[in-house]
Length: 579
Ligand code: ADP
Ligand code: TZD
Ligand code: MG
Image: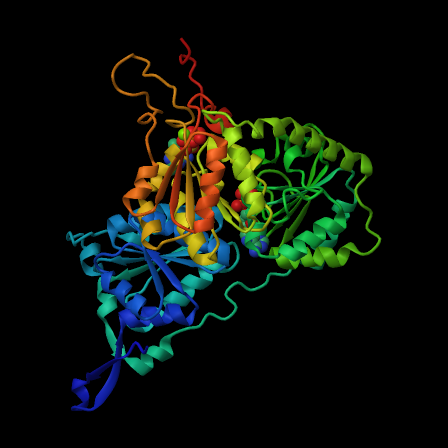
């Protein structure tokens, strides 16, 4: 359908002119650039915009809170390499979305937060407009780029800049500020159409310098105990075949970071996931592919990395990432597809596999750890502990490797990451670089919408609470999402008591034995309450087979978890704490 408006132009004495307006120009600009879905929450000044976008064939997914719409857009960006679009109202809606925008930027996910805003004249004189706020200024430090469009004729350029900024170089969040008046601005339809910009090659390949490729290969060749670490940048890059070829040709053990799991199957003979501490400690050359040496890798130094001297090779599109924490002996700046292809070309046919004593050491550690874990995963007891419950979910993903696993919580996150093997790229979506709670339902919605695959969201009961109201969204769009709430009555554990003995609950516990399954039932979905791993497996299988929105409330032993999951060491300690 054309977005044009038949009208009479007063200046040309009754002659018919086709006109268009801001609403339609924004829609046309997005459509021209392949935007198929918008995630948002309606309200002044964007309610009609959402209606019109839907009428024009864009899928508009309305959420109950902007943060979850923003998280949906962000993960859509990660999954598709195209910017996910989130649409919010002014000030409070914008701020709700901003958390997701900042999180997307931190995680290098491309997204665009489009917010309606109030009028510049009033905002700048601080005269108290409806939902007044200088949104552009507030967004700027929290995203990669921020733009405002004041004139309808600039919409094409504004949208194009936002798209290119989001996906080129290191991907990230972009803010696009659209004041209310812009939507109704009218202009000649033909001039409007001509003002639109189709972004050509939005994320251009960035080829590494040949000298840098040779340096990287020389360092790798000199290794006695090499390791490759794959990060979520490697998953994002969609260079799956090249990465697999490089790893298999080089024979180097690889360690996937959380969201890089499945890039090669966790059951691949070279996967060192189950020998993590050994390979970090004992390796002598480490090649990072789309992974930062941040807190998740102990900043590349200290106890985790052992005493042996290490050389790092780092592939990243962001030159400033090099030497962020330790010296990088061989920086390889470029996009991962191009860098890995160049390495593959340079590796030649005379490549020597790593020394067998290293491979043997890694393999035996891996087998030892896998064997140690195995019996714990088979425990079919009530109440369930994390391992028993995760043991069956691990089987679910083995049997359905194309399902997408969303995962958040503390124990629920850390243990699931270690236990549930992934088999395909970009199937594990989680709390990312910030370890943020609240991504669950937003990620689940977008994963279902963008891929059409079944989604299994494994959620701590606290984690789930951050986005729990979006089960209504899941039901409304009838999405094939099965949420499993690991209900241990609280944050980390459900056993804490108020130290004063008073009537207020302890700070980390929730209503005991809450029935989260009833929340899904309230909106027409399926709710199931389970107390054993066998019941859990049956409930999840039924949910995924049916494709119906389902919430499985899985009762977990309230005493089973540990403080902060695997990262309790990051808690500051008071000298006065223990009495
Ligand atoms: P993880 O948390 O999995 O360790 P990080 O988010 O820390 O991963 O690191 C991802 C890195 O990948 C970032 O430094 C980012 O610049 C980089 N990156 C993202 N996309 C690409 C790409 N297409 N090519 C090269 N590097 C990329
Ligand atoms: N707020 C936000 C936005 N992110 C956070 N990470 C936290 C608070 C702090 N936090 C964690 O780091 S994990 C967690 C919180 C509140 C919840 C852990 O409880 P859970 O998981 O029920 O989700 P387990 O299985 O009980 O450990
Ligand atoms: Mg919990």
